[in-house]
Length: 94
Image (cartoon, rainbow, N blue to C red; front, side, top):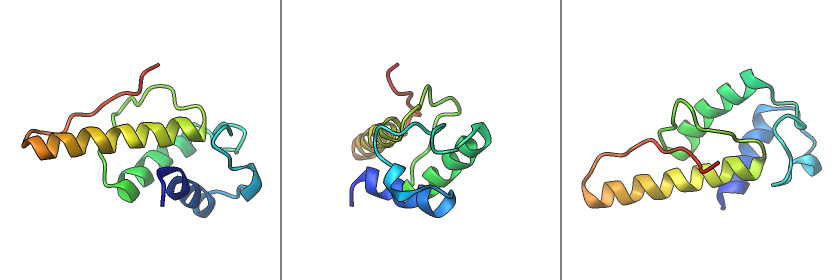
């Protein structure tokens, strides 16, 4: 299952969102996810994907932005683990 598919399932469980509206291009705002909802989402993402998020993840506007951010974290943390280092929190490119 892709990151987007896992994220989509998580969002559908946590929010009353029309399944058809939940596309990669959909903005979190258009899905009815406000700033409190984004904060809650960040905690759910850490649990679901077993990653550590930055306290300031940058601008995550669309569902695709969130999926790309998670993919970047997973890749960075995997590479860090494989090299025996410590995982660093990363911010997406703006």
